[in-house]
Image (cartoon, rainbow, N blue to C red; front, side, top):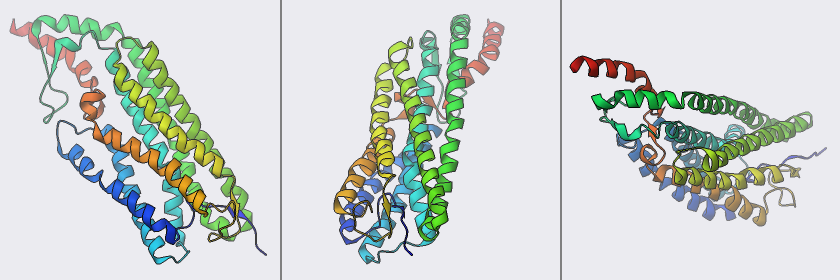
Length: 327
């Protein structure tokens, strides 16, 4: 007896998926040189770019496999490949949102030190982010400036760290949903489990996205001394990711009795596929392309390990002592 199970988001690759799959494969491949440059160049190398970098590699693999499946037109995807595809599709925008949160943290922390930024000259980035040149006569000014908004800076770090940890929840649930999906195709008792995991993952992911966007809006309009242009760009990027999150929540209700069905609700019709490419893949590519296209160290005030001001805070007292000794 046949039964219905949640339709695979993105549908099963058919012949008419070949051309768009190749186009998106090429589009993601064009970002590979940017990934390489951000890793190689000391002036732009930073761990906060790791999320879009990882997504480039994931999407390149997934869409290459999708192109291959569409070309062969078997109408069948292997068990393990199904797990991989559904998991990566569900977590792509989550990955990017988490990366944007890291960039927002840099801007928030830098804003609390805007009063001392002119007194500190960054040392050679290629060697060590902890190197900085502090004029002896300005160390007391810098110390006062760092202490001035220390409490505010502490809360920004606590809030962003808490949100970063919270992203582990949809990550875990998304992986679980990907693992359960092939089982739900064959076992009617797993259908409700898969649907629940999908909805919970989607809802939590979207909630976290809205929280990050709310924090971004607050930063843009209320935080003193923050670089507003970079913050507003993050807000726009998060708005693009809203499209992906809402699209996924809408199509999650789709059910089908066969992965190769072309019936309404199967997500295999041409209209469904077009919506998938336009509302899911295009926004992700635009966000990843922008995040890799700009130098995060310059535009988002990022250090090698993200929060570039921590080495300065730790090194201030030794620097001050050395400056006083040299007088």
